Amino acid sequence: MLEIKHVSKTFNVNTINEKKALKDLNLKLEDGDFVTVIGGNGAGKSTMLNMIAGVYPIDSGRIILDGKDISLEPEYKRAEWIGRVFQDPMMGTAADMEIQENLAFARRRGKARGLAWGVTKEEKGELRENLKRLGLGLEDRMSSKVGLLSGGQRQALTLLMATMQRPKLLLLDEHTAALDPKTAKAVLDLTQKIVEEEHLTAIAVTHNMKDAIQMGNRLIMMHDGHIIYDVKGEEKKNLKVEDLLKKFEQASGEEFANDRMMLSK
Image 1 (cartoon, rainbow, N blue to C red):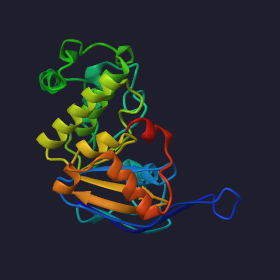
Image 2 (cartoon, one colour):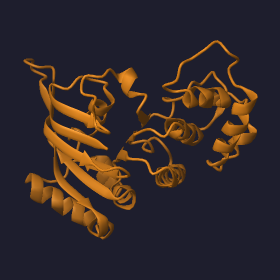
Image 3 (cartoon, helix red, strand yellow):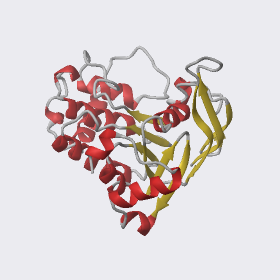
Image 4 (spheres, rainbow, N blue to C red):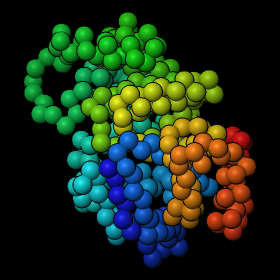
């Protein structure tokens, strides 16, 4: 479903702040893979997601999605095939619009827009059923402004919006990092449920090692702009946080440096 071939990215070239964020990165995802990504500060995790989404142009290499080379496609074009959920719950939704209006926009992603009334009767019934999947009672508040929702509710709504059109690829960039532990667990459980039910291909960057082990069917560890560890199946299920720390030290030759990850052990 996704192939990243020899992708490199350097920011602030030929300046004192030059940073090689990705170095000859290679990654291949099969249809239905749910990959969690961990790594230290500046490992290139979020940069990789941004390269896939088209936020920044790559310096070299190719990105192929479902057999189509999207390396030169702009971000708005890739949005037809890629769903995203960000770390900040305020992103991904329009606060001043109603819940149903936000969902209607997501439902029409990649389709031609007309001047018809915003949300049709037929759409309301379908959107209500979609909201029920969240288990948050939002189906009874469809006309409420999204800005009135809690961070967890907004993040759950954003997740639903990102997957309504069944994207070829779902990108989750630390999408529970800004939530309290109880709410984060609820959103993670919902994420796992939607990805499995819709048979989505997904990449989730997380700072929580336990979550990285428990979520998905595959785990990769990044360091200094490339992948240093790739594990899946039974081997992944049997991992412990201590195993990941040891693997990092073996592969990188240095101790793991990420305060948030160490605190989430």
